[in-house]
Length: 635
Figure 1 (cartoon, one colour):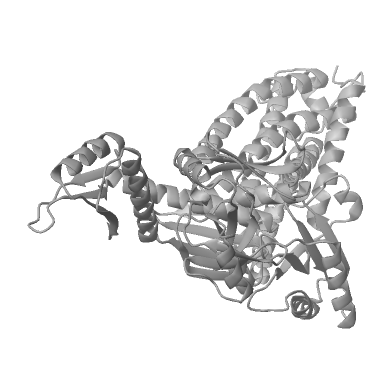
Figure 2 (figure 1 turned 180 degrees about the vertical axis):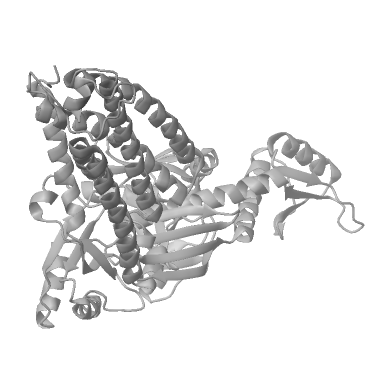
């Protein structure tokens, strides 16, 4: 009567083995390590870099646990791992590797930072069994609060507006006496009232984000003052914040920092949390890797090249180096910036089949690019990437023809890997507005260990008290309930590890809550079985009816809790969302273990007995008929 088919036992066994395997990585702990990543967008970590690191460690008589070269989809990383007790060797190794890789400390080509890496065995790594990420409150790390300079964002928009108005008036053949930015306003001067009237009509119909005024003055009466509307200013500020958050995500994710937290705080601030990063100075370096993209024309005139050969830079030009270290003269005028780029993807030329980078510009960028390419066919155009105030030429292709439609193809002596890397760099974008660190906080790993220990102990002690009570009060059914609770926590941790979720203190609280909910489900089942026995059901029937009828109640209560968890997940943020994720997953594992796993165990214990005389579920009181023979059997 109470038997599962063999296939159901097999599925339950596979699920529990899966939970055990993917829970194991969380018990191996972490070790101190030194992490090597590129310090510039155009620098790569290769096998040669690995050999240099190993050679430097050997010369310094440092013997790490292992040196690992990790190849990622976006970039490669080198990690030097030490024993948990070798923190002094970790500090020495950082200094040695930093000195070996960065010849100029003021302009480092590689970031050498302290970090923590998991001690997961290779056989678990081979099946992608990884430990959960730990939040800043559990693992330690650095916390930054960044202030976005909204004034600079508005000024930058005013400059772009001035350039846009200049182009628009030229296209409509409206003469003006000069366009200048005055504060955050743009002033357009005219020589006649007729020209000003024409311009005013044009701009009112085509520039909805501008508030136009016509100030009257005695000396210079023909002026239009364009001011950004409040709605436009708000849009600029919102865009600056979102663009900076997106750029920080792109840059920090490329550095291999596990589960960084990058979130908006207030109207103009960004919170950045980097778990596991122990070095505040290097963390600032990571944030400093944000880059600015610019497109300019190359000055290849004979006069300019002659002056460059003599070591001079002509007026109106700047000198930069390309990827091969060759000097290049680039005009100061910026044609486009990263703000005008919507997408960048690697590809191949349809005719020559050589690797290319395909760019997609926004409407304004497409119009400007079409004009520039039409006027400069046969000349070279440089794409520059500025990092930490220093610019480098990523590529400088020749303009072969006028390019319209906002789709641009960059080609010229690039390998497939270089085209992919260039597209990645251009996609990463640039900061829409400068930022400064207004608060920084270092949370040591010892504090994180204390939090983990406190959370683990509270959960463990709570489980022990519950398990002892259930075993005493419900006997065999109570012991089965305790085993199902263990399976519940194991399955929950396994799912969190498989999803690579970030566990925080609120997450530990959610695990404790999950235990409570699972106990509630087991109590409902056990009490329902008792009720069936009280009304005179045979033990086998009581078990079957008890589980079947309790399931509806359990499902209703868990769905109610799930709805509350989903509301927290949708409308909450930060620690609240972390709690909600663990809570929702815990409901699923609770239903599975409380109903399916516990019944499978009860079926194994009692289901094969055809003539079951009694079940060990504690005292079953029957006040209506204490002398009933069935009562004496059950007792």
